[in-house]
Length: 133
Image (cartoon, rainbow, N blue to C red; front, side, top):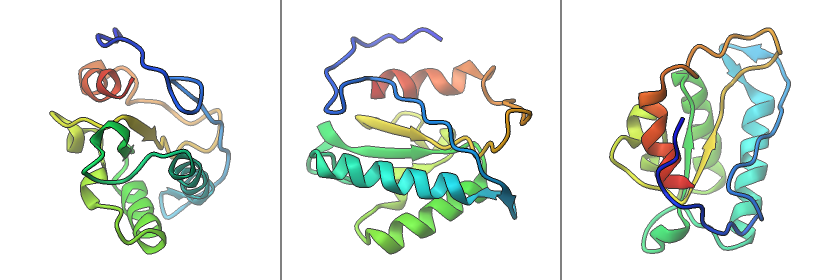
């Protein structure tokens, strides 16, 4: 992947953060990862990021390649934060042409043996990743 935008200083000190979240799939949802995304969003909100306009320079987006993971995340995040817009979460296709300053990518993967079939699809990743870094 080639990132075409210059790196910007992050409020968390890094432009790319990876978190290993193990769990187990229940109805094709990794609930441990849903918990981790919720905790990360809480941390981001605490340092000045937001969900929606008018502060698009600090806006949070959440992506997952799996529709059921997206649905579980949407339900959890909107029940916790009613102002969390459904336009701030979705599959990679949701953000084509859009821009967020932070993208949280929920892989839903639970075990090291789980496949990462979506990684080679670079054309889907290039735009959301380059615009968030």
